[in-house]
Length: 381
Image 1 (cartoon, rainbow, N blue to C red):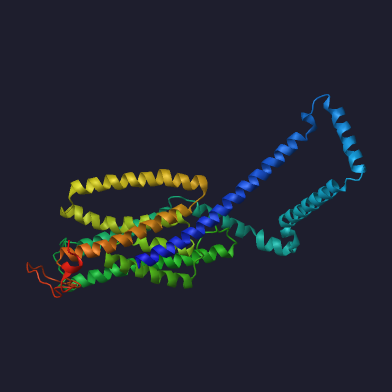
Image 2 (image 1 turned 45 degrees about the horizontal axis):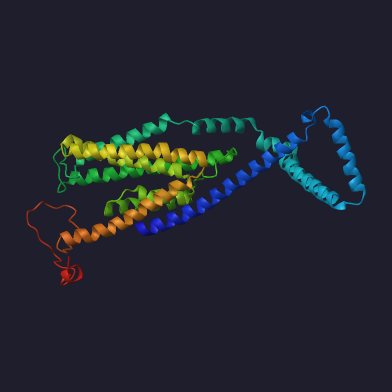
């Protein structure tokens, strides 16, 4: 799964890189043409010619006229062709500018200049430009608080329940079901809100960005299913859900910066609630935790200051996609290496899945003793 995800992310990276590179070349070409026109206009400006330049200019003009009169028609044809292209370009520009005028005036006013729609568009733009929306932040805090409270009551991750229940009690499964209902309820609620939000903005001709996702119920069902699978994969093989959700959002067309911020927020919500339990239970090795915290903080600072600055300066957001694809590829290799290292350290014992509700025991048994008859023949060292 990780290898396939890495492959698809690399495909998206190369496609986005070629597109952004083409845009940069077009932008440089436009700037070069504009600079050439400015230099040409400056050199042909009469104000830049000296007091004695007028006679010289007139004399040069007369000489040019004589040369043209001598039958040099090549320059005339080139000038005429350039003028024709210029006229066609100007006509296209004027047509594009005056395009609304081609529509019936009453229909145009009703469709585009409706005061209510203009007011709604302004309101939606103000809402979407808010960097810290209080309502959404409040929902995130509520989601985090609910997950943390249920985890405290239920226990898990090596931590006992605060109310003393175990996996053999019925209350444990009630709390487990509550955890599912709480998270899935929030997901369904925000999925409905996003769908309604898109429909309301489409009704007033909202100026969506190219990378905005236009949500509908079909997209909601499709991506909710794959998001649910991403959570299952993350829980089974111990990877971060962002390794699956990040590429998924990029395939959806989400801007790489938005995808990175979304996965970071998701990781904050899922990890912090469990971290609080570990800290309060005294299971955190603070020396290790402080060391890795500082390393992670330094890496995050470098990423935000250097890589983001490069993306903003060059517009090459595809770099973020390439970094994500490389991380997933390295994780794929790491999983394979860990697989063989773990089997080797366990004397090639494959015990299978653990029981959902198991009682700790000191016995060390293995149902499947050896994957190979003589593993030392294959791995002699």
